[in-house]
Amino acid sequence: MTVEQVMSHLKKNGTAQTVKIYRNHGAKGDLFGVSFADLGKLKKQIKVDHALALDLWETGNLDARTIALMVADPSQVTSPQLEKWVGDVDYHLLADMVASIAARSPLALSKAAKWMRSKKEYVRQCGYSTIASVLKEGVEVDDSECKAILATIEKEIHGSPNRARYTMNNALIAIGVYRPALKEAAIAAARRIGKVEVDHGATSCQTPDAEGYIQKALAHRK
Image (cartoon, rainbow, N blue to C red; front, side, top):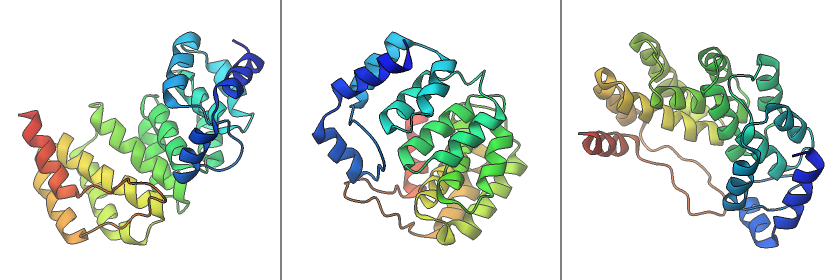
């Protein structure tokens, strides 16, 4: 498919109600309001098309950028492309999608390490979301590195920007769930951190209690 064909499809399938839902979740800028169900169908048609993904991103349209990240090829993504994407992000759901691409790329650990140090809300979010995804997928990360991440989370989470706090909490959970040797360390850190306050906007979304989530997830994995 061409960029023009994709944009025409998106415009045709967008709805005012979905625009409202996305706005309530913090979406900004130009968008048609295409549901993820419709985007999933479009993804099946396009499959993987990295060149198309790059061109769709440049439109600046949120729906186009969303489908771009759905059809991009993690094995082809370059460091400059990831830096461009993360620098453009102004919406937390898009940030998590950029992180998903990064986590499945050969650049995963280097990008996570760099982005986690950023003071910018969505860049830091991408960093911690990337490391959480890497741990979930079973990529080898030294326990010593995970301990250092836990220490940074404990020290910096309450002073970090809104959406970064959410993914830092998720990264703590991922360490506790996917690094069995660090379960107790993660739970102890969660107890010292206490409640993590995140503004989820006009939605019913909630921030998970890290200790409870770790315990529940590990119980289900037995």
